[in-house]
Image (cartoon, rainbow, N blue to C red):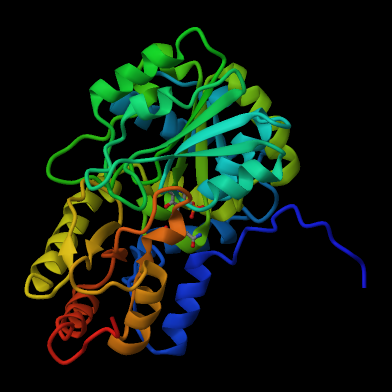
Length: 389
Ligand code: PMP
Ligand code: GLN
């Protein structure tokens, strides 16, 4: 047996894999991993079939089909008032997780420090470690989870080479304010720190808010690597297709990694999406659609001991069980899955420093019937169903 000197001795199996497996094992309703249980629009499915029939079955150009990148350039100009060159500043990737890894591998060398708010999407830390960097998780304040740039400011050292910002934020659902983005600009101007902005929930934003991207700020865009996912835009998380927008001088470097870790992305989906996204309503309707689901779950749980925290964007809402049970988050999530038949994600699984605040994350990107059924089960809490402590 060979001996492996693990690079990731403290990286557990992803909580999404673990909880989805538990959901299957206990036939629970899975509000854990973030994926819709309703069907995607059939149009892009037909588009993929057509693209295959039309012969788009070989490698796409490494940075993606130009027809798709041109659509993305036009969209970005319209939404953020900034013009990006489709040829040299937009790259199609096999999903956002891959795009994030590519960005990190491109710019982070041994012992470089990467800052990100804690809690966080769980790929950031292992991706930084994989390339020899040092992940620095910066805990958000509780209970407001404000994306507060002053928290980052205190952690910047000469070794800081990258900040990863995620807005709307998974798992808290908070969004960045204009004042915070301007503060970030002031903090970074004159430094060589790269800003990776994970914007996968850009169209999943509620209560009339508008998504703010650092791409919109000329002095921030020169250092910004903006990461997106079509999985979230078009209810097809399993398609694993996304893209990166970054100024030419950044994209040139990014493509040196992209061409060697992916080379290119699934051809037929690129053609189908390019056609489908001509109508902006295909992604603009997402916010209203999901806001109704957020509100349905909240309303259906109002008589339960689970108390919702405010959410401004994303697929997720945190619910507090403080005062109802003393169980630690992970234990509570496993108990809830087994006894109540509803799966959530314990917040602590997405935290490094943040601590255990008795919070569980539910994904409400589900059919109304699924949400109602889950809520019915959860309303048994404190009535016919009691936690051990
Ligand atoms: N970033 C965040 C914040 C996410 O929640 C996710 C999961 N959807 C991703 C990135 C990864 O997206 P993809 O499925 O396109 O890899
Ligand atoms: N982004 C999704 C979530 O937070 C899941 C991604 C994954 O399974 N890796 O639930």
